[in-house]
Length: 96
Image 1 (cartoon, one colour):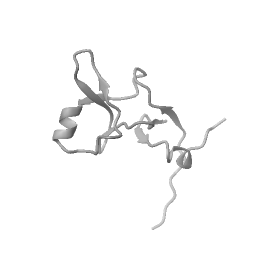
Image 2 (spheres, one colour):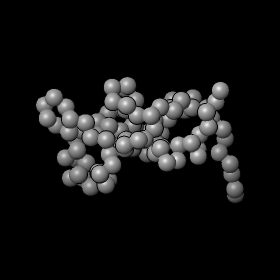
Image 3 (cartoon, one colour):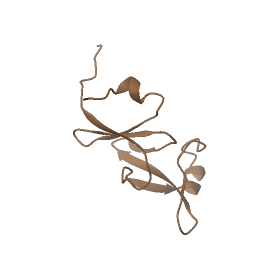
Image 4 (cartoon, helix red, strand yellow):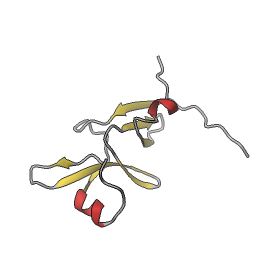
């Protein structure tokens, strides 16, 4: 069966710290220890206590960590996704 994705309007935000787009943070040391990802491109924020954390969004498959230049997409039903800046405007077009 061949299908086409049903169009869904979404809000698209380039990730910025302090905007509340993430669902949480994971200590960088835990990300490295658990060997979840190549960490070189992940956003790494240093907290006042010196700990380094990586922001993520939560979805039905688990977590997606946010990388440098990524966009956070929030569908009209509230579902969140992360998309790299290399593909965001191949998948989404601005609604005017």
